[in-house]
Length: 469
Ligand code: AMP
Image (cartoon, rainbow, N blue to C red):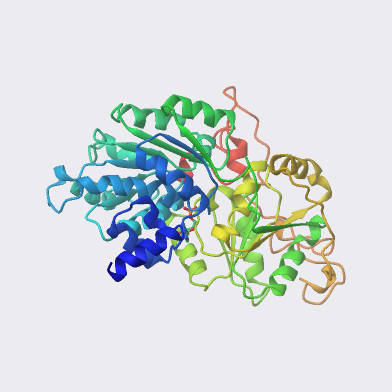
C-alpha cells in the first residue's frame, strides 16, 4: 500500500472526508483548506446528496452547510467535467440560489475552492454591479452557477444563460429568501428548470412557510437536522447586559476597550443607526469602525468587508439584511446594540460567532422597553437569558464630552452632535425631521423616503427586498 493509500485508509478510519468516496481532486482541495473532519451537517447530508435524494437541511450559517451540499454535487458533476472551449459543453448543471450578494460571493468562493483541481466551471451573478461583467462568464458556460434570484432572471431575460439542463437546484438560506419576498422569482426560476432534478433546501429556521415551500419544490425529501429547531450554537457564550438607552454607546466603548484586539460585529436595527454608531465609534480614538448596510454600493460593501477581514477595521456595524451571508473567519465577538425585532434574527446574528466549533461571545444590550423582544428570543431559542448589570462598567468614565460635563455623554443613537441635556443642537436627521405629509388616497406618502407602505419592517431592518440583492 502506498503512503497516499495508507493516509486515505487512516483518514477513513478517523472519519475524514474520504469516507464519502470523494474524488482525489476534491480531497486535495479540502486538504489545502485544512478541512480534516466533516462537520455534523456534512456527515449527515453528504451521503443522501450523493444518493441523489432531495434534502431539506436545517442548519444555520457557520455549520459548514455549503460544503455539505456542494461537495457531493461536485462529485456527481465530475462525470461531465471537460476541457472543451465550447460553451455548449458547459451548461449550468447546478444552480445555487441565495438571498444576498454577500452570501452569493461567499458560496462562490467556497465552491470555487472545492472545485479548483477539477475542470468544472463555477460562476456567480448578483445585483448591485454591472451586468456585463457577469455576462462573459455566463456565455462562456459554467456547470455551477450561484445567483441571487432577481439578477438571474435579468440574465435569463437577456438570453445570457439557459437553465434547461439544470440537474440540481439548491435553495440556500431559504427562510431569508422568503422573508425578502423572493417567492415569485423562485417560482419563475423553477418553471425554467427541467422537472426531473435533485432539490436541496437549506434554512436556519423551519417555519410552516418553509415547509410549504419544500412541499412545492422538493420530492420526498430527507430531513437533515444538526441542532434543535432554532437552537443557538453551544459554542456561543450568550450574555445580556441590562443598560440604560443613554449608556449604550459608553458600554460599547467599555467592551471594545476590554477586548481590544477582537474583531467585533455590532448589530443595529436600522441603517441609519449603523452609520451613526460607526461614525461615533471612529471618533472615540483607538477604535477603527465601519458600517455596512443596504444603502452602500456593492463595491463599498466589499471594500468594507475586506478591510474588516484583513484587520484594518476592527469593528463592523451592520444591519441584519446587510450581515446576511457575511463570512468572517473565527469572529470572536458579536454585540447586539439593539435586540432584533424578529427573534429569528437573534439566532442569525449570534451565529456569526462560534462558527465551526470555535468559541465565541455574543453580548446583547437590553433596556427596560425590550421585555417583549427578549421573551420572544427566549421562547424561540428555549434558553433563559437573564439580563445582568455589566460588572466594572461606569458610564461616566466613558464617552465624556470634551470639557467634562459629568453625567452628560453623547447618545450614538441620536448622532454625533447630540448629548443628553446640555447640547441642544437641533437634530439634522433627514428622516425624523421630515414634516408630516398626509397620505394620498392610494396610501402612499408622496415624497416619503419609505416608498412602499407594505414593508415598513423590512425597511427598518435595512432595506426592501430587491435593494439588498
Ligand atoms: P458555512 O456554514 O458553509 O458558511 O461554513 C462555515 C465555515 O466553516 C466556512 O469558513 C467553511 O470554510 C468552514 N468549514 C466548513 N466545513 C469545514 C470542515 N469540515 N472543517 C473545517 N472548516 C470547515
